[in-house]
Image (cartoon, rainbow, N blue to C red):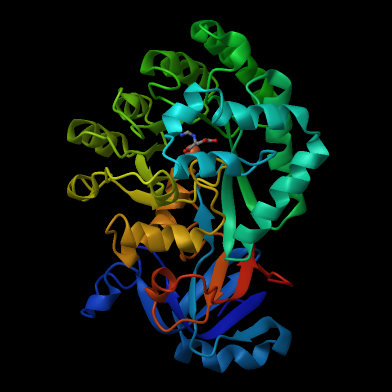
Length: 418
Ligand code: NIG
Ligand code: FE
């Protein structure tokens, strides 16, 4: 047997890999790809060996105590992946939360100059250091729950310098903390006040800034907000055309409040994901199935806006579109920094199964970010793992407000403090 840097014994694995568990007669085993009484070996930051505890036991004497973790029957999942967040911003919008409690809608607030544009003013006014200090608290809350990869969007700058500032802070967070950060350029998030009635001119700027920020290494993907209170599919198409000329993958906020063709456009560009989707049609689901685009569902926004229109879960299942779940952490529609709570909401509000929701925060979230070596426990994949004091994987979706994490490994190293 090869030598390992780290080993975990006496564990149960929810692998989310098609290589494990799927042939089992055990019904419980079908979706998690689960292996019970297992052990796992890690080498050079990757998963190097997966097998039964019994197979590993004779080799334990070759290792030092510090290299061996006895999980004592607890569970390992892939490290969680939060694939849709706006966690870098300044200020907050609890005033809008109060206004909504008095009956104002999200659209009313946006029309009166609040909403996204209010956070834009706060983010433009704040220094890079201030934005970093405010954002790192949100990141730390997510990391404590076993998040090992996260997507972070720009989109509260809406001018070149502030979009750059946001993306820079996202990169700095990834440098300072033990987490993989994927950035998305979301300058097409809202129309800044200085471009009032000139949306096409603004889109032209968005298209001009993109190659520069990409050149600076700040952009991993390109996003937009396709909605009647934001940009049309034709305007987003212009941004996607530039993204594709730079070989950057695309994704989109689509069909959150209405259906104006966002997901169809994403599918045309073979996009990584289409997100929100409450108003998505079956025709466009078929297009997403063909383009292998992930449906990212955001129950925190559904909950906060007291939405009543459910995303078309059955049709997504029917056409086998991969479903991911994310916090959508943002100051307006989803001030949520708990992926475990988003997973619980995915079950309770969207009627997803725990298996679907867990796949949605691991393997399918990785797919939504184009990270083919993350989100599953498979030989050769990154050793990003979460160790949980639970008796079955569904406990992670069922318990509300309890964080059962007992260990986090990233790139083969156990995190020193949780
Ligand atoms: O994902 N829908 C657009 N963007 C965010 C909300 C941003 C905000 O209100 O600040 C979302 O819901
Ligand atoms: Fe969002």
